[in-house]
Amino acid sequence: MNKVIRITMPDSSIWDIPVDVIATHRALFCANMDSNGDEVLFREIFREEFDSIYQDDTELINWAQNYMSWNDVEHAAERVDYVGDLDYDSGWKNGPMTVIDKDEIEEDNLEG
Image (cartoon, rainbow, N blue to C red; front, side):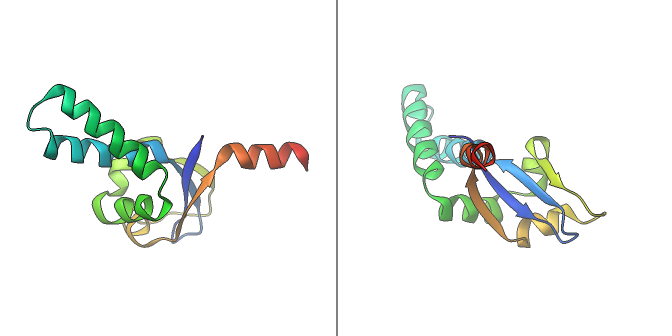
């Protein structure tokens, strides 16, 4: 899947953030906390956490808003629409977020 979090910032600009960025952030955090330096266990925990959060839209948004900042995602952000200047960190913390599957959008565009 090609899922992204789509967020509307305070200036009404719309951004897509790949879900992989949020899932990786969470999986790294959990694996580092729970693996006790065991590399095999680290990889196992990472994969389980990544897969788990990738499938849970509510937890993705929760993790993004409460444990990440705009600086954590800016490198991967793709602007879909733009209106003006804004405070992206505030927008990231407080803007409405939804998770979408970009593959489904592209299929809809091809069909319509």
